[in-house]
Image (cartoon, one colour):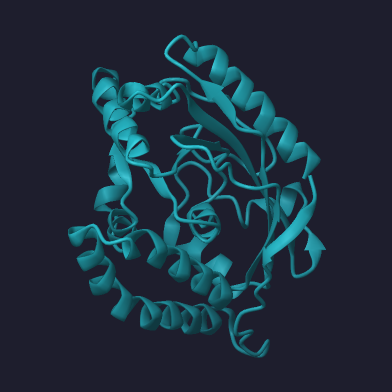
Length: 274
């Protein structure tokens, strides 16, 4: 697949002589100034179901990437077919900003995110679907909610691992929510589509990110958000690579576990290739 930079932002590169924390504060202030007028506008757009509710987050995320100095190269293209469920690997909170800048997308997030300060607000304004992964008896409700959004034409992003990885290895994918694509077939569609997507953080400050340095980008397990956020915002530019795989068609007879294994294999291959 040809590689084409979707956006290559240097961002406002604050002088290197600034202390790291001051650099992070400047970037946080810039994001806050950007968000303040957009939050009420997006809230109204979501309430009124305006088309703007899908496009405004793309502008916001691209602007944030410019401010914090993240450059994105894209291989392949998003599938045009609908309904479309996108299944990706998960490395960091930064994934939301990178993927949200690609196209109008909504995310499938764990229920705890809804209550997080600031991030929870942004997730709700992004029209995320919140699910309780640890309560298996609620999986049916979650897949139905995701299926309804897919049927309405929204492209939804599911992080197949269910948690963040170390940025080097792809963890096993969970199959429970992949079956949500079949829920979108109630409208009479012959098939729904599931597209693998691989995300890798390749360079920082122009230098390749090795296994040791990846911990500065990857947000793993119970890491505290605040110091990780400061580390990202105070550091040099980051180069991310996003690779779209070939969309897979599924119908009512498709076995979700077999489909999940195929998606996991595809994402692993795309991560290695990138």
